[in-house]
Image 1 (cartoon, rainbow, N blue to C red):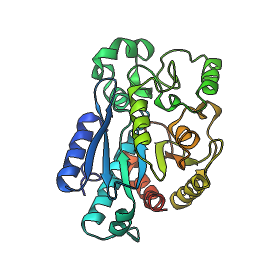
Image 2: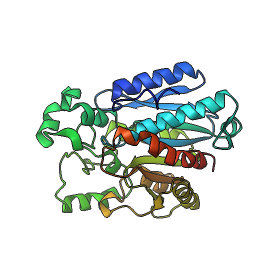
Image 3: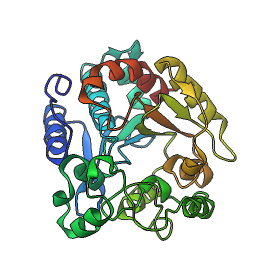
Image 4: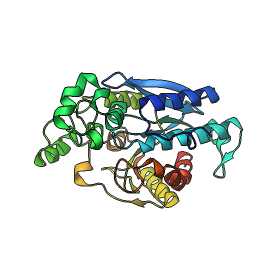
Length: 299
């Protein structure tokens, strides 16, 4: 195995690139693609295994502090690839056979600048350093992208209503968290996801955040499969289904996927504690969610 035994530091962009390079070198059939670039020009990378004509999408690290999900996604990708290469099973599932019918695209990190800022500080984004320093002298609680826009408030799903709630909380300008931008899809990271989804008819979508060990599966006219996905993930991981706080309702990726594309989707809040979740949680929490990751892929 590549990741569990070798990761001993938070996955900044350097470590992410090295891990993805190792994966793609070991498993030649993994298709690596760049779906877009961040404000600071960092790649937003997707890894695809299996049937490319019929895909589920797993996407993580929309927020800077939520980088443990990057490692969950890379670990899951490796397990899928090993089973696929060996034409074998994982968690009782014939992975090779299933992936021939439905592939998976995994985006380990939607917000590479935000993760970099949280781990390495404002110096990692020189173009936006002055802005970052002016709104967050300490970046340990940084969630947004490089210009202070919360990507999961920037999708065009109930955005105007969410903006009113932001304003009622005094959030009216770039911020480390919860500022949804001047308009929906104002950021290259959310545009990249929008364009990706418009080009691919994903069977279903899972968006990974942290923390709380909760699953959110509804938004307005929710497809029945969203509830099935949410209940399945919660049952297999020992999580619970719940409703997000009002300030986290609307504007999100899952909300847009359901509301605009009419595709089943859920948001998973992995882990329990305070963001950023520590590296010491990696093995135990991955073990907890592993069955759910497989179970929701082939549902």
